[in-house]
Every structure is written in structure tokens, then in C-alpha cells.
Length: 260
Ligand code: COA
Image (cartoon, rainbow, N blue to C red; front, side):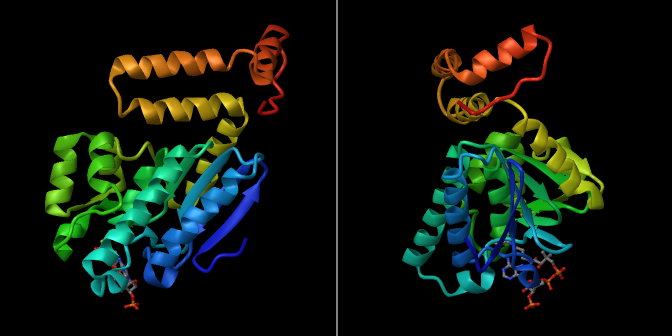
């Protein structure tokens, strides 16, 4: 599938999608957000994909936000449609069978930060910058930023970032739990690919259930979440991957998972 605003690549079970409007710092226009949703749906349909890396083209940005030039002319109903599209893509990312790792190589502002937050976790280059600067444009985050940021870093930090529009560096983002790891700029994609390959070497059905339970469990009571976990745990027994993983351990050999 070819895209106007994305690049896609594959290495074994690891797919990479690159947001590709570098002359506009990968700003998220309608086409890009729509294409991102379509690309994730296409990867979901391909059972051989086990991890997705999401990054930005060029040296400066993951994505410097929703496209301000496009938003400047939006009516209220167009803005609602744009926000709904962004939310649908975020929901699709969270519901995807495979983990999605954000490799944040530069600015992740506004919608860029929100797309990174919809990924399962974030690795950042030391040049990365994060923020929700929408209030400086007279609006607020519209792709889930207020909610996902609060769930990721806590409500106090989320309030401070959203109210001030402050832009923070990679190390500060790591210190508040927004970013898992900060990596030298030139090593970012290599390091993220290493983590992706490690995940892809594990039992795919188990990883998918882990992702599902972690995502769903975040929005329900601990009791309900623990029940979801117990059901998912039980559902894995009888899968080929469970038999293979345990037999391989007991026979002191590496497991050869088939995703079944
Ligand atoms: N929407 C549309 N275009 C954007 C954009 C955005 N969010 N962010 C950057 N661009 C465009 C610029 O207009 C410029 O285009 P031009 O060359 O045609 O003039 C190009 O990308 C390069 O950006 P520039 O501002 O020249 O780069 P910089 O290094 O001087 O500054 C930023 C980088 C990120 C600090 C600055 O671009 C910025 O503040 N962007 C907006 C961030 C924001 O508010 N995002 C939230 C949106 S809701």
C-alpha cells in the first residue's frame, strides 16, 4: 500500500511506519491521520506483523502537532470530525494486536505527543521535545492528550503541561514517566529495533493478550482488571504457543513460537 504522507518498512516481524511530511515537521493533517489509521488496519490484517515502530521523517521531528494551517480554517463541526478521526486512530492503536513503540526523534508536540501517547511506550532521542502547547493557540489537545497524558504521568503533571503549554526535554520526559528510555540521537532506531525484535521473539498470542489486558485494565476497577487478567491467563492454556513455550523451557531449548 502506498501513502502520500507515510513511509512503511518491514524487517521480519517488525514493521516501521514513518510519519513523512518533513518539510512541515510531520504536522498531522487530515490525510496523514487517515492514512495512519489505514496503515495500522492493514498491518493488523497481516498475521506476520508482531511489533510496530512509529517514528518521524527527518532530523527534527516526530510530529510538531496537528497541522495549524489546516486547523486555522476549520469550522466547529470540521474540528469535531478531525478530533473524532484522531481519537479513532488512537483507539485503533491501543486495540491493535501488536505492541506499538514510539521512536521519538525530535519534536513531539500537540497531536504528535498525543500519537506518541497512544503508542504502548515511548523511546526518545536525546533531541526529543515533548509538550501540549495547544493553549498557546487558543485550543486544547483534541486527540486524547489530556486523558492519556494524565494516565501516563499523573494528573498534576498533566495539568501543568496542558495549562502552561510548556515544552520539555527528553530527560525531563523520562523523569516523569512519559518516556521509557532516552537514547543518543543516532542510536534511536537501532535501539528501538532491538527492543522490537525481543518482543517479537516472545509468544505472539501471549504478547497480544498482555497488551489487551494492560490497556483494558487501566479503565476499570482493580477487581475487574484482575478478573480480565485471570481470564486471559487461562485462555492461553491449550494454545500451541503455551505448550511450545513450556516444553522448550523444560527441554532446555529456545522456543519456536507460531502465534497459535
Ligand atoms: N502545523 C503546520 N505547520 C507546521 C507545524 C504545525 N504544527 N509545525 C511546524 N510547521 C511548519 C512551519 O510552518 C514551517 O513551514 P514553512 O517552512 O512552510 O514556513 C516548517 O514546518 C518548519 O517549522 P519552523 O517553525 O520553521 O521550525 P523551527 O525549528 O523554527 O521551530 C517548532 C520548530 C516545533 C518550535 C515550531 O515549528 C512550532 O512551534 N510548531 C508548532 C508547534 C505547535 O504548536 N504544535 C501544536 C499544534 S496543535
